[in-house]
Image 1 (tube, helix red, strand yellow):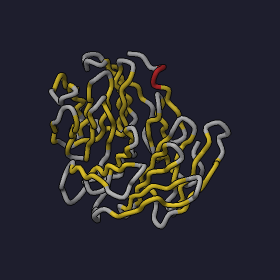
Image 2 (cartoon, helix red, strand yellow):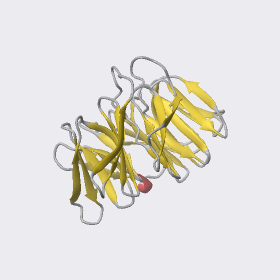
Image 3 (cartoon, helix red, strand yellow):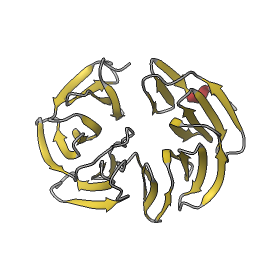
Length: 267
């Protein structure tokens, strides 16, 4: 489980990144289960990723940067525009070859070359003034899939967008699954063509994921929906209310003090 007062950010093959509300970022070794290194920043860390000994981070005031672990120094640090009324869901940075893609709190993607990070390319996902942070960021082949609470956008070999109240996004088997605030699960192709849709009345999705031909969505009240990839058949498990936190890592949902193995659940 996480250290007291820390929350999960992201993980690599060897480390789990966690942060507290005082600007401390800790790295937990997956092998020893202990904190291997701790870094202090000027503001709470809300998003971070690690590659080749470099941490890419985003702070609560929308400051972003690169931190080199071996020399314990910031390679670059800058601040994006101020963001107001931020959604609690904040995406983690991703890496594409030598590029770091950083999701900001004001609806942008910043693309940095990790070898020469001084100049960042900017992609605007949404320009709303409130609740506009990037809540999802992933890669599907040569296409980036990004979302704010109001828009899903694909950037790359295909381009398109879908605008609606969005709770979660997941990708699997060349499909994009969007979980809306209206309780709908929508399946799109990799070019954002709608393929299927299923509505669950009164559902307010807390976390969601998709893998192995299955789609998983957990409601804030503890209904865990397991569906097939075509959104035709489903089963609902009662796993109890989410009292404190819930997040997905791999094939697991971590809910409060419980761990739910999704690949053990059938239709």
